[in-house]
Length: 124
Image (cartoon, rainbow, N blue to C red; front, side, top):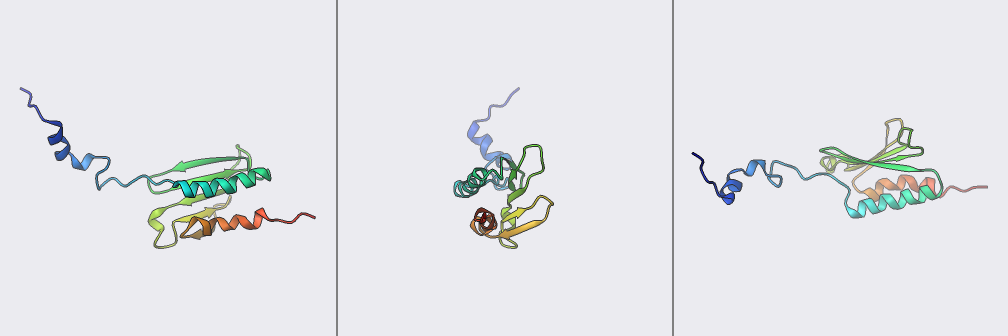
């Protein structure tokens, strides 16, 4: 025959499969302030018509914001956030089109200063 199990008993016994359990890490994503900083720079570069498209990607351990000049090309820059590297090299980095790490840091503001040089170029 079948046994009747109350829902509270089932949830208490099945803790290891819970989404909020200690074994399942929280998903990695940019928080509101970080995404706002990135989109602010993105908007300024779009206004200068240097950037035209972006994509956001996510894995178990990291999240990336890729910037494109044309949709069909490789991304010009990828802004990565990988929290497990926060105490070692810094959680944030910018990777160039050729795969080199251009800047790495513990805060997003520090890393995004890379684009300050490009935003304030003088034109004769």
